[in-house]
Amino acid sequence: MRKGLFITLEGPEGGGKTTQARWLAEDLQAKGADVVLTREPGGTAVGNGVRSILLDSSPGSISPEAETLLYLAGRAQHAAEVLRPSLHAGRIVVCDRYTDSTLAYQGHARGLGVEPLIAMNDFATGGLRPGLTLLLDIPAEVGLERQREHNRMEAEGLDFHRKVREGFLLLAERWPERVKVVDASQPPGIVRSRLWDIVWGWIR
Ligand code: TYD
Image (cartoon, rainbow, N blue to C red; front, side, top):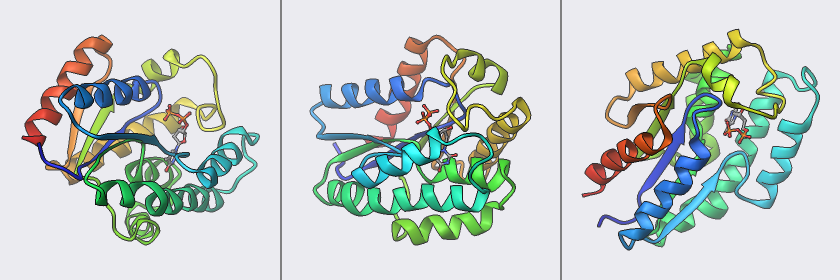
């Protein structure tokens, strides 16, 4: 099996990324892979601090620019402390959200622009981009309906989340080799096997 692979899971709210990321890590481990399962915002002490500022603050209390820089600060630390060392050691990294979330949420939905944020992602990560991205696609209304608790981002209106989804789909059009779209409104077990087919095909 190839080593030092970087796989991200992305998509709008309620697509079941967190469960699927865990299952994917288990499926890879069952094949003997050395897997690191991590997430953003989070993954380090700095990232968890940033996460609580970002998600627990009241709606409207963080400017779009400050929000972007906070996600990027958490990402910079995550790349330096977890992602690069793990990949360098030949491990497979499965990351629940990464650079594409910034492009879809802040770049497209918040309207800060995708192009400048591509450059800022590269600045934050030293150019560390994923090899494979699984985009768990789900209509905004279906995804939001599935969420029980609502953090600051999830409390945004339906139009915002529609733009998020649109932003992700534009990224899949832009980078079709890297970003694979999977219909996340299917039953979780079906999504799992679809993801596995993509990942296994890519790894071998
Ligand atoms: P989280 O509870 O991890 O949600 P999910 O289970 O959907 O991943 O919250 C992360 C939130 O942060 C989510 O609403 C997406 C948002 N986000 C951004 O807006 N930009 C980013 O760069 C990242 C990584 C996340």
